[in-house]
Structure formats: C-alpha cells, structure tokens
Image 1 (tube, rainbow, N blue to C red):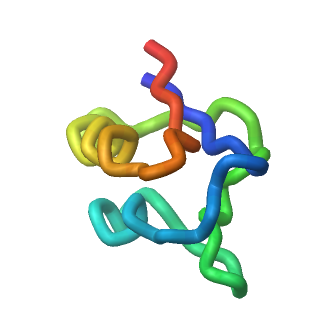
Image 2 (cartoon, one colour; image 1 turned 30 degrees about the horizontal axis):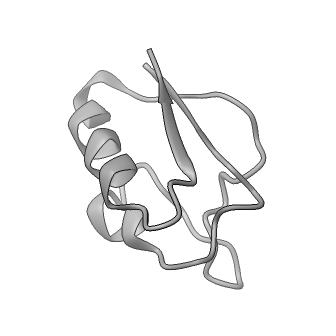
Length: 66
C-alpha cells in the first residue's frame, strides 16, 4: 500500500499524527511532513492506521493508493 499527502489540502490538524505517530510526522509548523513528497510506502503493520488517518482527515488530504 502507498499513500500521498496533498500539500495544498493539508491544513495542519494533525489527526493523522495522532492516529499513527509511528508513521506520520509533523514539520515545525504542525503540518504533515509527508505532504508533497509523492507516493510513500506504508509498512504492512501500519496499513490499518493509514486507512484510519485517511478517513479522519477533515480536508481529505491523505489518499491511499493500493
């Protein structure tokens, strides 16, 4: 599984980070540090957390790509 975080849509709510601190990181301004980095590999043990983060993102900035 891969995902991407849209750099324009991400508004810094940090819900993704709250759900999975093992995968998501924040930059110094509280935005996802992964935004705008293209497709990122999700480790199999964190796939469920990635799906939850996608569902909880209020701006729908996280997109899962199977």
